[in-house]
Length: 165
Image 1: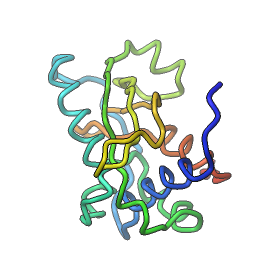
Image 2: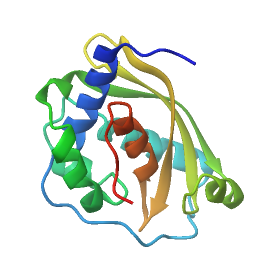
Image 3: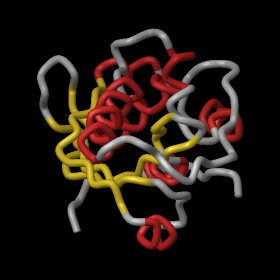
Image 4: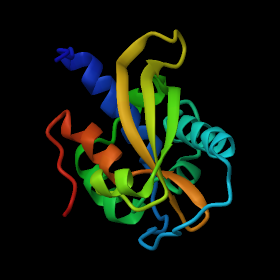
């Protein structure tokens, strides 16, 4: 298992903070069970949304918050632990997206359709990895591909945060 330097973890989580540090936003608790997108279309949309969500250089946090599953449920936990302006240096580099069959979504405790996303959190100015080789999930809900709640919660757990049940 890879050992993460505390500063790298802090910067990466701070990146999460900036991206979701916004008031408001709705919850996406209902799920669409089908999508008419091809895997290539889904990959393109997921990559675009993932990149936008983790873009610490974009100050429009309201639009980023809309890309997070159950965003209103997670907002308070986020503000309680991780609001940090130093996260403006963070970005995501998506390296692979795989749309999963329903059985694999269920195994990952996700609604279907879902996708597995391989990514690196990087310094957006230099491209240097802050957290390399990460895996997360996207879920398709209400006609949109969103960063999954479990991905967000896994990232904040790196510094001792805990999401609501």
